[in-house]
Image (cartoon, rainbow, N blue to C red; front, side, top):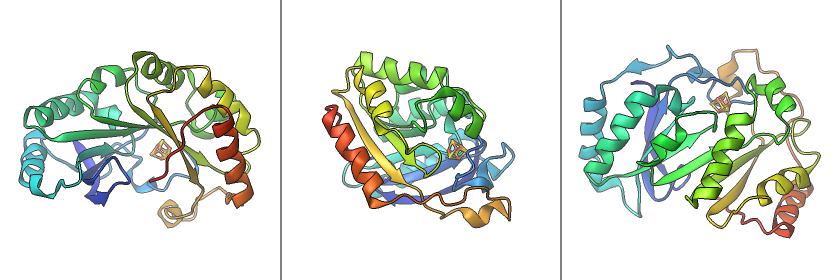
Length: 233
Ligand code: SF4
């Protein structure tokens, strides 16, 4: 398994205190990405699943407040075979697992049997615009979202809000989400930031991406109006 970053984080990548692994490579190329250093499949270092498993077991005492291990990226599901194996092993030793994904994997449902907490991005409701910015269409993302709603599995949807990209029509997001059973789903808005800008080494393309408090409130109010549950981390 190839990993370009790891470290502990409290409550932002799943519940409690978690050991977070950033898996190398991503199939999207979002111009606002804060992990540009990990988008190549060759970024970082190779570890065996055995090495990672024993590191996780040795950290067990640190997983307080319902914590555990989170796999994120890049896009963690690109390494689905090794990820599946590791998730299974972690469950076998009683470690809580979380997965953070861009939602594009056809293998997601298979992985979710061994995931306690799912965080999935949803960047745009319009497939053409999504493709224009990220290089990837929306079909599989919708399929995964809808499957999770239908199955009643827990899911946490994260929507990055970027001025000029996806902030014009909050009701379009809400309309789509609320047309499914969202009783086990929470939604979180992530206002644009520039934390990873320097990692693009001069190739950062987003300008004026910051959103106002008014836009954030509009999204919150619209989602509430549609009966959707909002969370913050
Ligand atoms: S999906 Fe996530 S990791 Fe991949 S390019 Fe977009 S923001 Fe970066």
